[in-house]
Length: 570
Image 1 (cartoon, rainbow, N blue to C red):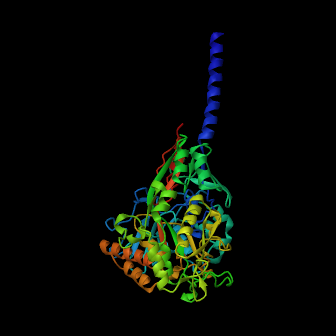
Image 2 (image 1 turned 120 degrees about the vertical axis):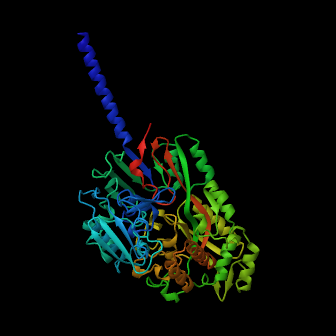
Image 3 (image 1 turned 90 degrees about the horizontal axis):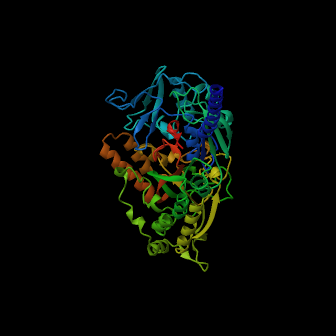
């Protein structure tokens, strides 16, 4: 009888423990991420928003990623091509990638070179509004050598041949899913754009634009036993402060992205002891874009903020004296002290890292100079009126200054408004919901690409440790307009023959030191022409719960690129 009783008790105990274990496993395998800028698409070729690129990165993947040290790591490829291993031609006119043969799409079909070739055709279609088109600059053709070998041929020697399919901005799409989505049809393929078939660790289960994305583990993922989490939810909405609070204080979420929160607020939350704040400096620069085109609301849709070959200049920002005065009037150190703390540094460059690319020719911007700004404006004929606002030939220096909705950005706006008032510039402030501002919807008037304002502020950056492809964004031909569905990366609409000529020289230069010198010159043209006003070199700031392990913040690629390695440890 005792044996039976003991056996029954043991069985009950096992059942009880098993039940608890199952409950624990169910909790442990649900990962909750808070991206307060909610994803609006999962096709990174149709959005320049980091929120969309990262949300897509756990589903669709490139041939290689950049790790936390900005080094290239093979993902769908077996190795990183080099001249030494024979995968980069000695004349640099081609690069060959060897695909892993153990990778299938989440629908069970094989990944092949046909998918890679198609992805190039998709983004470079003449009628496509592809935000990643610069990744394929000077690509003549992408050739399937065989089912698992792809060769990319360039129109001329490519000193840096890693633009195509390296990093989260340039992934591989499945040919079968997107084959009918070429050109103008790209935006119409809602099902494919919201539910892409991928090779990554997760599959999209539910997508609510500008709200929530729910994923489940990919049963066909290449690494057995991974991912460790079975369900991932990205919740959007709210603001950076509430996102931080949800991880660091309440513990409702496991991870919160892009915590642009006042340093003292973030520190108080961290003291609750439920999570930690992570920072990583990469190439992020908070900047003000200065519109070089006329954004007058009375203009029609084909003219407002459209470059028109330089024949639609801004009524006062086309005067470089005004642009220089705006930059001189800003106290960048105050912006850092109040809004960023140790997560920010004043900068005068659009390329803040890697160190060898950082120009030393613009350091004077770190010292606010109100007197010099006023002198420049006076000499240029901009005279203060009775209302304290400068004007010339009936044109007043009255600026519409927009950015995304965020407490730090609104604080920065207010500070800069006061600084500009000291030099006779009137400023109207506007903030737009981040999901809309960064969304890239060609039908919306409120996106950063449309730029229906005089100046706008946000952070821009590049992936990896070489800004060669990034600087191509300021090419004259990359200005957003209705013809390219507003996806060109030259947001400020600045255009210079000198800049474009230097880009051509860069593409033909192989000496490392000479390439560095040219990239610094390109940085200087952007800054000294004041197409953009660099403000703050920003670290990426995110928060994770104490139970989340296997995570390393990456300042050079998607923060989620190693999500298959994440696990929970109570």
